[in-house]
Image 1 (tube, one colour):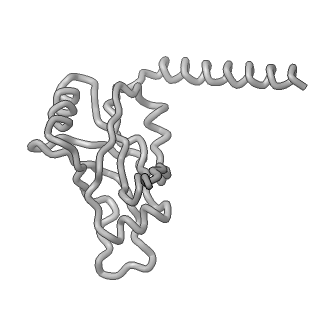
Image 2 (cartoon, helix red, strand yellow):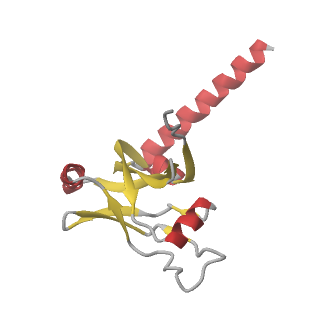
Length: 155
């Protein structure tokens, strides 16, 4: 019997979708300690203001806040520690080539469970200007108004 894979989102970086154009996204594993996994599973992770860097052929995620596990002991770690992302060499080289270009950066978009493993959806992003953000908000408002009118007509 085949395994059923269901992805459960544990944390999402909603600000990233507002502040950046997402050029490409890829899945990466993350090196965690046991108490961090328990804390993330209970929803105590925050991806706001976090980013990733390629350093010496390895990718590290920085500023990702994982709160202390309530039932933990001396094995609790620093909430803002630098965590290593687990990727293949070809993927790391691809990310390094993107980030070497001006204006591109790596931002974690979401944390989720895949089977029993915690995974990160890592995006290669380009920053939006203020007018781009306003345009996106206007489009979103217009779509909401159209949906509302269609719903009223259906009654």
